Length: 101
Image (cartoon, rainbow, N blue to C red; front, top):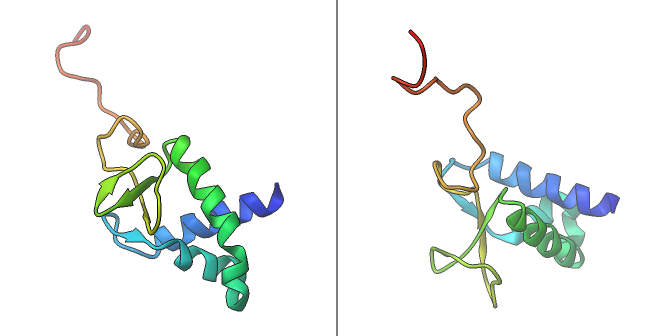
């Protein structure tokens, strides 16, 4: 389980190094996770990416489109802002006209 957490941290770190709208290849995270032994780390990265996608933390994409279960090459991205899976903003305003003045 500790390896899973480290793999998730590597995915988060690889995404943090990119523009918010950019995606990463699983090998980018694997290289952060295991350095020269990145190929052996790919199964852990794939497993972590699937778990993070299921939790709504990332989106798995093929040909630029979100997929639930990628087959073949895929990329890992943050969910688009405003999607149901995206984290809420840190500070939300109260909608206008929803309560006493």
